[in-house]
Length: 170
Image (cartoon, rainbow, N blue to C red; front, side):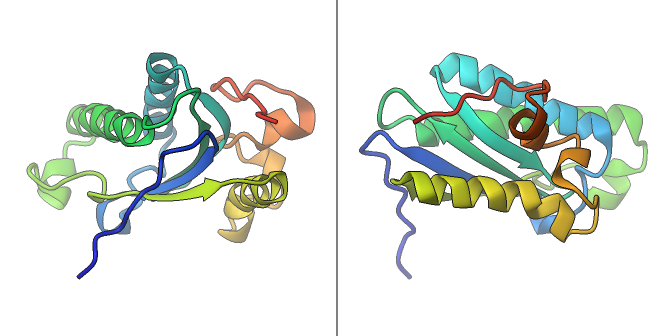
């Protein structure tokens, strides 16, 4: 079995996807989504990274991230997943008493890996940004991208705050 390789040796945007373990809908509530975005903000600051776009779905997350230096993606993703997992599990233990009984105290929150797609061109960047913004529409959560509060679509359509600083990288 070959190991999946993530390339991070040039300055380009990364389209990343990671999922809740076993695709459980543990991000369906608003507060868990806030936790994921709060940790994203923290990681962006720590790594001096830029968020081009994002969407937090009920069971997975997509992000378009750019770094000013190469070799930072793995560290960024490790921090985002580890810190959010800790905070999410803590929140569920405190606010959903049946969480441990249903999901198991020792069960992981996120799948162990993430998928990263390197974006080298502006057309591909636009394609991936459109893809992630349309995710809630395709899932039947909203009828228009700007109606979903857990994505960067409103920033692009209306320049409204979305809780995460969005920066278009040309």
